[in-house]
Length: 134
Image (cartoon, rainbow, N blue to C red; front, side):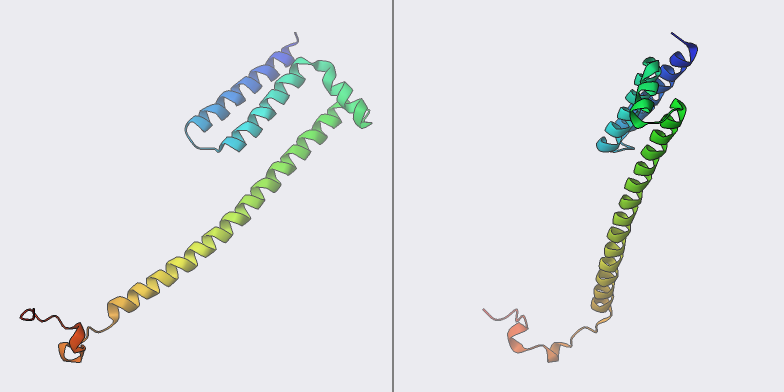
């Protein structure tokens, strides 16, 4: 086995360990963990199957195999960035809704606290509590 293959497998194993450690600490979600483990397995697989890159490149019609690898890596990174931008947009909408709800609740609470208390003589008789009635 070539030294570059061993380095690739070692990198993939270290990356998979880091992803699993992050998932264990609840710093990443399950779906992200699965995607990154798939990336790690792909790196390990291509490191072990040296002719896999050549086969992949010829299937894509690319004559220089590392170009196919760079194309696939760039495509994967673009997909990750797109998914993350969708999550940011969704979280921005959620944050806006939450800020609006907090503003409404704060306004209602402020209004309740600043409203003057009613005088006992302005309270209707039915609402007054008469301790001698019974």
